[in-house]
Image (cartoon, rainbow, N blue to C red; front, side, top):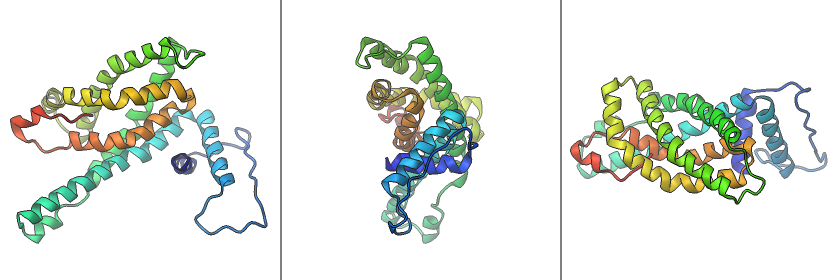
Length: 251
């Protein structure tokens, strides 16, 4: 609920539907004193209901706004990890202090992930889930062979295609040429997709079995926060020569 509250606050800042589109009564207790910066259960419920209202009135824009907040957080977390490791190695090698000062957050890189989070990630998932549910409607019984089939098709066909698109899109935003993109896909695709299956098959199963259709992109976005840390580390890793082709990491 805390994560949904945070996401609701963010999307509400981007979008304000008209009163006719959504009317959410606020329940207050005038005599109740609350400290600044705290949220009551009523506040949290109001924010969640506001988010649900935005999902119905502005579905795609709401998903884009929430994803635009989540994805760059993943990249920034990855950069913190990279900087910490680099500074630790530099101190061990007794490098000059000037070298340590140069190790800072790459904000251009964070902006690239923000653009990715605001565009490709939510737009793809928004239309993909709509199309896929139209192709294979959700079954009345969530624990069914229909959902087994959907998870199999999702991870067997959609996931590899989307992984290649993510590599190409992030390389495009970074200004890499076609050959560089081909080399990266050749180097990182199989380690990425195999780790993807370990992580995303359980998440996708939960998504189809337990999550309502309106909240599936949100669920994927929240799960993608941790995945984006790994994705950012993989996409932006330094070229380590031939040994890098034997990586066991994934995106």
